[in-house]
Length: 330
Image (cartoon, rainbow, N blue to C red; front, side):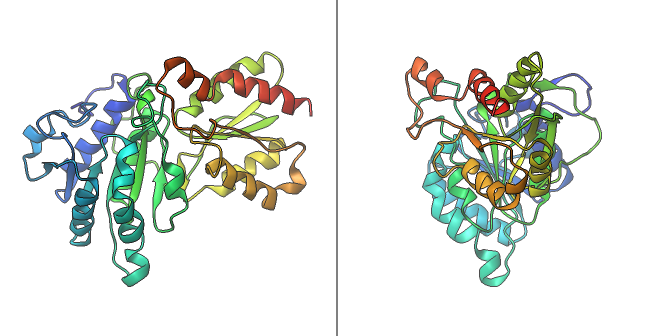
C-alpha cells in the first residue's frame, strides 16, 4: 500500500492502490470484493496490506464465481454501500456479463434504483498472458446503455478517475491496463483530486492529424508523434480517458482543427470503439475531413500465446508512423 503523504514518483499500479486507500479512509461505505484480494493482496498486489488496515468486513476474498460476487455487489450498492469489485483479469468479466448488463446497467431504467459500484478490470496485452489473460473486452460493454466506462493511461488519470468512479452514482467499469502497471510513473498532487468522468484530454497538441486513442495506446501515439515531428508532421493526440460517456466535443474539436483522423485502439478492429468514433466523425465532421478516416487495431483473432505472434498482433509505433505518413500525403 502506497500512502499519499510523500511526493515521490509512483507507478500507475500504486496510483490505483492510493485511490482505493484514500476512498476507503474517506468513506466507510466503500469496501472491496474479489479473488485473492485479501490475504494474498491481489494478483498484482494492488490491495496488499488492505486486509490488515481495513479488516475482513471491508476486504472480502471471494470464491471463483464472478457472477455471484458481482451480483452480491449490486445488492450491496442498492442498499447504500459503495462496493469496488476486482476482476482478477478483465477476460473473466464475461462470467458476470448478465449481472452487469441486465441488472447493474438497467436498474435505474427499470425502477430508478441507483447502483453505485465499480468493477476494476485489468485488461490488455503486451504481457505475454495469452488469449485468457490479455483481452480488451471494453467493446462488449460500450454497447450497453446504463454503464460508464473509463480507461486511464497515466498515474494521474488512474488515480483521479478511480476516485471519481467510486463517488459516481452509476455502475462504472474501470479498465486498468496491465502493461502500464509498473512501466509508467509520475509525481502526483498530494491534495485530494478527481478526474471528471466524461472528459477527454489532449495529451499532445498538434495541427496536422488527430490520433484518437486510450489506455496503453496513448503512449505509442506520443512516441509516434515525437518521431513524426522530425518530418514536419504534427500529431494531435487525444486521450479519450472515458469511453462512455464519450467526450464528443473534444474529439470533434480536434478533427475539425486537423481535418484528418487516426483511430487507435488495442481491442479487435471489428465493432470496436474506433468503429463508433469513425461513424460519429462521418456524421458530424464530414465537411471538415481532408482524407479517409484510418483505424489502427489488432486483427479479429484472440490474443496469441506466442510472443512473436503477440508482438505482430498488437499495434506498434511503426504502424502509426506509417499510417500518418500516408494520411499526411493524401
